[in-house]
Length: 103
Image 1 (cartoon, rainbow, N blue to C red):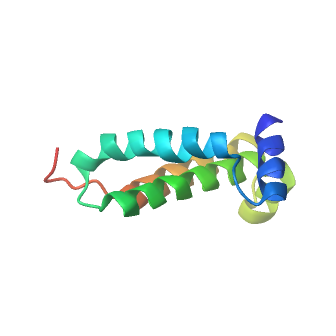
Image 2 (cartoon, rainbow, N blue to C red):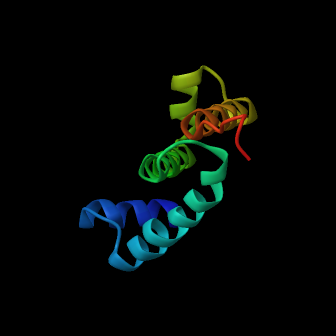
């Protein structure tokens, strides 16, 4: 898959290609930080790290095989996918920590 290929290329180079760094780290993540900043009291750098962490988690779980999910979760198919989706949603919420008093 395209995700798997990008991961292999980045791993062999030891970093994202410079154009991807500019597009993803400098532009995309900073846009997300700017959009979420009014909803959280987190410092921008901390928020950027949280967003990058979520990107890494999403990629890793997207590449997880059915066997890996079965070994980890003890379930298959759509039940395993639903458990991963719920975990990612909960983790994103906890990492960003929107403040009820803001926004």
